[in-house]
Amino acid sequence: MKNVFGLMLGIGLIGLLALNLHPQEENNTSQVNATLLSSPRPTQEVLKEQTVAWYKYFDLKEINPQSQGKSPTSLLIKAEKKQTQEGFVIFKVMNLSNQLQTLKTQDGSLIMIQEALNSEGEWLPIEYWDYDWGLGSEFSQLELQSQHSVMITVPKFEGDFETKLRLKLKMNESQEVVYSEEFKAIVNLGQFNTPLKAKKTMSYLK
Image 1: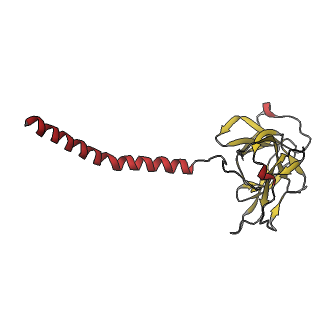
Image 2: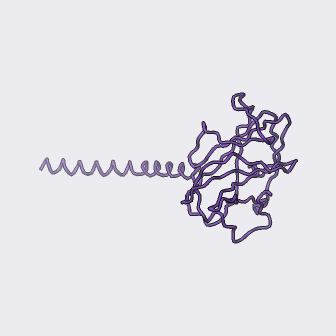
Image 3: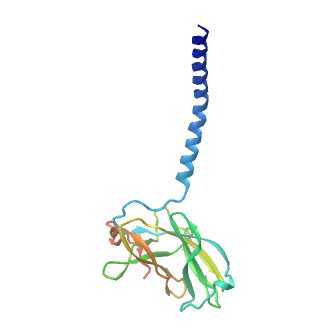
């Protein structure tokens, strides 16, 4: 009889312990889910048309003398291999000229798009720039001093077409178009398609 009573008491204590632990377990799960949702994630859906571009810029600073080099244009855009971020490629935009370069920005982003080589070897846009996001946009300028640089995050896409990409940036004052160094990537063939609902404010930075 004592053994039966002890067994029932043990089961009751385990049940109480499980009830007390369950809310905490739920809270932990919610916190983990919230963290995952707020983290930058790569674009994994199958894209059937070009997407709108947005390139956050950060870490404006003087160029390390070891990273300097000659550029055919006033700006050099190259991959920063020492810095990585899941789902993104980090690029550095460097002003190698002796003059201040003023870059137009929109809502905290440099105005640029990505282009890709199609199966016929032609460079075509896989993104477009939208000068009107519907709620109004804030335009400003980024002043990039001589021998200074700024970082940008470039999204990695998923797909089944291996190709080369490049970034396309339009200068503010001279209207000069600057391209980044080419880099290997994977995209969806659908990303070469023009959006069905093309807007008047859509631009390829020509």
